[in-house]
Length: 178
Image 1 (cartoon, rainbow, N blue to C red):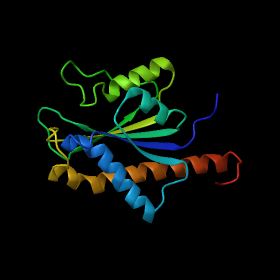
Image 2 (image 1 turned 90 degrees about the vertical axis):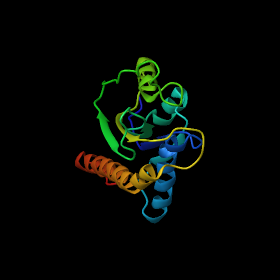
Image 3 (image 1 turned 180 degrees about the horizontal axis):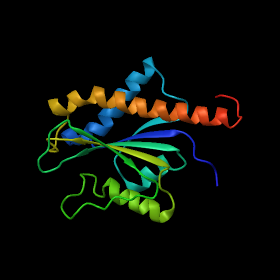
């Protein structure tokens, strides 16, 4: 089995469902910021519609996967962001009926399917951003848009921290620094 390497940052969403586009908007912002301050080599920034097969392809073989998606809880505080570090082997419970994402199957279902197929991500960090509006239309609501700069900085920190930890581990193991 090939060792896990690299990082996938996956923004899940739909640009035509208002705040549900927060994952894609975050990836776009990260791409802009990367032009000024590159992320560690082996980092991929990708947008995805949330299809389980596409997600598995994107995170397969990656040592770290970060997923950004919108969530719409009953008492949402638009722009509030939740960070969830999934322990190895930990699987979330699929959403209750009527609570699925706007992508059909949600991330929880994709993770359960990937786990059962032996195609789950390595280390996984999920960012869920509370949204206010998932109706048809483009553009994020102001509160969700205002959360993007802080979210992008936090994701960059996670990616750089992982890259530094990987570099240190290789160096301590006797491999030349990358």
